[in-house]
Image (tube, rainbow, N blue to C red; front, side, top):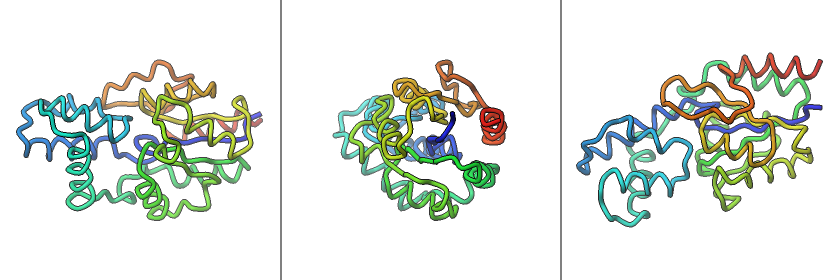
Length: 217
């Protein structure tokens, strides 16, 4: 019996992937990047440290990872701070409320920093939706390691077979499968993300809600 839904944040609930890849492209050009925007898509779903490693490779430099992380953080916190109310997918708030009314436990399990997760929740008034919220930085490992989802299952006191994970990125889907939990993917139309390992692909949370209703009949 389905008892819980475990959500990724970026690319699943809020349309940040395009925002962050374009922003990263802009600041990288300041440091001499001459490659394509599409080459930057490989950062999608990665930890900040892995993102920085990829950026260093694309820039062909030997900067410390910490320097790249700081440049990136400064850009997105001081110059181009995301407006989460603007970028949340249009159906998400209403569908999350409807799913909550079905009596399901809800968790938000994100690779983002806790400060960004908290701001997303606050700006979109979602505090009452989630029973548990966790950042990968609090777990100590990043997707595709399943630790973030295994912790959420423990905190919600549900078994693997009683939960669904909703993701979008390749690494997120792998994390769900590594946790041995049914994993659904929000369909990617723009970035060429490999979603082939997902148990099912949905267009959006409207599609998720319909599936949940059928499951709970």
